[in-house]
Length: 273
Image (tube, rainbow, N blue to C red; front, side, top):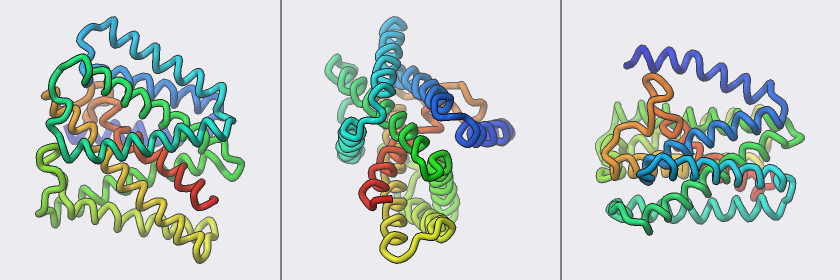
């Protein structure tokens, strides 16, 4: 398993970097849409949508919403509405994590609510990544930054939790996560954000605002990880899929990004960066 994870990372990380930095906006948007569609397919299994036809319909609905969002991606009003809606969705997720039994029954109402939540999260993440990539001030580098920020947070949480983890963060959702891991993620990302702020020559309040945005982004990214853990626990599965050897499915790799991308973009707008 460890060998598979290493090989997948060795192939996947450079490929992601090339996609982000080398493709034009249309090409990047297309690849990002494909990733969201694969994630939507896996989300359909976690809802769960019992019939294959229902999952295909959910996939097509996601594709339709992405196409609509692409046509209006230049609209500041639409982007703001989607980003603020995403923030409200994630605030609800924070509440849901504290009530993990909520939505556990396989009812039509619960399935519909999870389907709508997933649709909103996929669309807001895709739109946030595309808008970031389209920024005139080195847009692709901003996309790469938020990706690396999530990776740094995951690594900081893993090593701090493994070395110092004592106090469980959400034992009924993900028993392996600890408050010490959260602190490790915040510490690692503080250093990373500070270094990047210096690199792009931010000073004073601009630097402080940027670092604050990064730390809030990391906190929400942890919520994204916990949300997927909650859905998998409710369905009694270990991974969302088997697409990536050693890593599970697409959702297992982008669960943190689902929260991080829209929150990060909203934060950049808030601090006028």
